[in-house]
Image 1 (cartoon, rainbow, N blue to C red):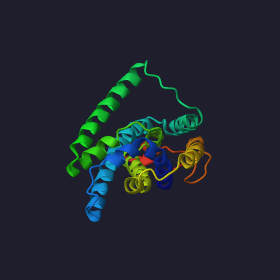
Image 2: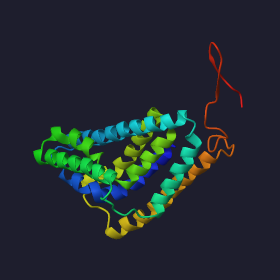
Image 3: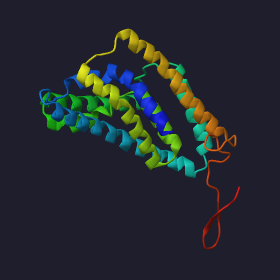
Length: 238
C-alpha cells in the first residue's frame, strides 16, 4: 500500500509540475549557496508533506468511524468505484452548488496567503509556502485522500499521505533546479499513463472490499468481530 502511495505521488508529480511548477520557480532560495539551497528546498517539502499528513489523519479519522460502524468492506468497494470513475470520466467544473462554493472559498484564501508568502522573498517563509502549497487543489491528492478514508485508521492514513508526498519530491526538486525540463509532448504522454495506474488502485480497493478470502489482498472479513462478555471483550474466532 505504501509503495502504491509513493508511485501515485511520483506519477502525479508530472501533473504537479504543471500546476505547482510556477511556485517552485518562485521560491526564495539562496541560489549562490548550494548547501543552503538544498536545506531550504527540504524545508519547503517538509511543509507540504506535513499538510498532506494532517489532512490524511483527518480523513483517516472519518474512515475509522465508518469502520467501527461495520461499513469498511462496502466503503472499500464504493471508494474503488469512485477512484476508477474519476480516472475515466473527466469532471466538469461546477461552481453552482454549495459545497463547490465553500471549497473554492477555502482554496481562494489558501492561494491568497500563498501569494503573500511568495512576495516576501524570504527563506524563512519557505515552510509556510510548503504548508499552503499542500492545500492547493489537485485531482491526484483527492484520489490519495479517498484511499486514506478507506484505510480506516488515522495513523495509517496519515502515513499513506506522507508516502504520497515523498513520491512528489524527486520531480518537484528537479523542477526547482532545472526549471521546465520536460517537453509538452513528454508531459502529455505521462499524463495519459496516470489514469491507468489510478484505475489499478481503484480495482485493488474493489477486490479488497469483495472479501474473496485472499490473504492481505482481499480478506474474507475486514472487520474485527468481537463478542462482549460481562468482564471483558473476547475476539470471536472465524
